[in-house]
Image (cartoon, rainbow, N blue to C red):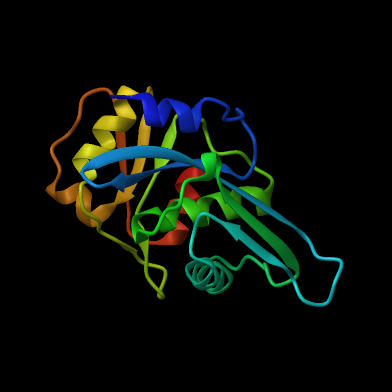
Length: 180
């Protein structure tokens, strides 16, 4: 049933910097959700981090990885992140979606609307494999997505799915290069 995914993506803006779609698992069912990020210059000494629907500590870790591995100077920016639709996500498979949304907002460059992004991000900037990749990609195809950024290690074990481009990435910098 497509209803949950349709509900979460129905009001997604097109070509909006800071908006990205990722795939989360709810039990055995994939749900595509929109992550929204806003990175704006801070007007105070300490930048604010306001996070809704995702663990704040996980986001702090990912922002630190982005600073170190991507060279993005986020310390002078307030960062706001929201999972559209009020969903709560607690799996590391959405890490790359978070990184992509923040980078998109910071760079003020949208991610192509037909792109789905997922993968766990390690402290050294590597993209780690995740579970249920085939199910996530199949759901993306059903919902009209044309390409998926996936962990390279998952891509090696996957069978090709007709009608959707799979791009394997090993590091956050490689992923950002493919997105922008």
